[in-house]
Image (cartoon, rainbow, N blue to C red; front, side):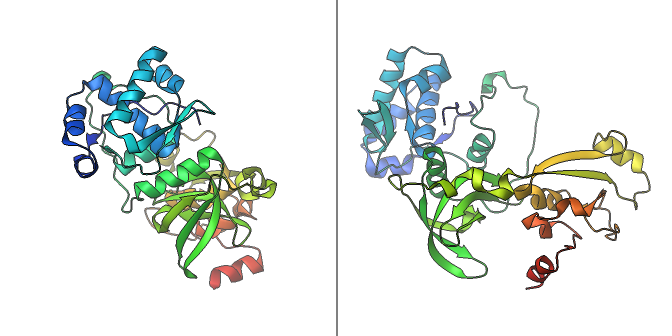
Length: 328
C-alpha cells in the first residue's frame, strides 16, 4: 500500500502514553514543533501504525520535500518515540516497533475515512471553506489497535490470529486472512478467509480481540481474494420508485433516476448491506409499507445466490435451503 494518507486536521497529541514511557522533554519537544513538522510526525505515525511501514520516499512524495529532509523527519520521530520505529536495512524501510505506543490521538471515524478513501489526498485545513458538514457517528467504533493490526495484515497480505465473539458460537480463537474493510452503514467489518471454516466471511471489527499479525505465515492460493466468489461476483440491480409512493417523481429526482430506473452494480458480498441501509423493499410483490420504503427492487431474482440477500428488507429466497437457513 503506497497511497498517501489524507491531509486533514492535525490530530491532538495523546500526552498520557508519552508521559508514562518517554521523558517529559520529548513531550515538550513535540508540542514545540511547527504545524507542518507536527503534521509530518502524525503522517509517519499513521503509516507505521496502520500500514506497518514507511519509506523516505513516501514522506518526500506526500509533502513535497527533499529526501534529506524526509530522513531528518524520520530521525526526529525516532528521537521522540524510539520504541515506535525500527529500520529494516534489508528493505531500506522503516517498520513499526514491537513496543509501539501512539503519540497522537486519532479519532476512529477519521482513520476509517482515510482507509475507506484509499489514503487519498484531501484539502489542507487552511484551504477549507468553513461550511459545516455534520456526519453522524456510528454507535460502535472499533478499537484502533485492533483496526491497525487488521490493516497491517491487509497491507502485507498475511494472516491474523484473533479471538472472536460470534453470536452463534460465542468466543473462539481462529486465524483469518483479511483483504478488505467494509462499511455496512451500521458498523465496520473486515472481509477475510476464515481458516477455521475454510470460507470467506465478514468479521465485525468490534468483536475482534487480541489480534496478532502472523507476518511470516504463508497465505495459500485458495485464500486469496480472487477465490472469494461473493466478492468477485458483481450483481446488477434495478431500483424503481416504490409503488406506494404518492409522488414518484420526487423519488426519481432524489435518486437521479434515468428512464425511471436506478441501476446499481454491487459486489454480491455487499448487496444485502446496501439494500438494508437504503431500506429497499426487496419483496417480489412490493408488500412492505411505510415511509422508509421509497425504493423497490424490480427483480428480486437478481439476488439469487447472494449469501447476505437475507439482510435485504422483505427478501424471500426462492431457494428452499436458503430459506431454511434464515428460519434457524
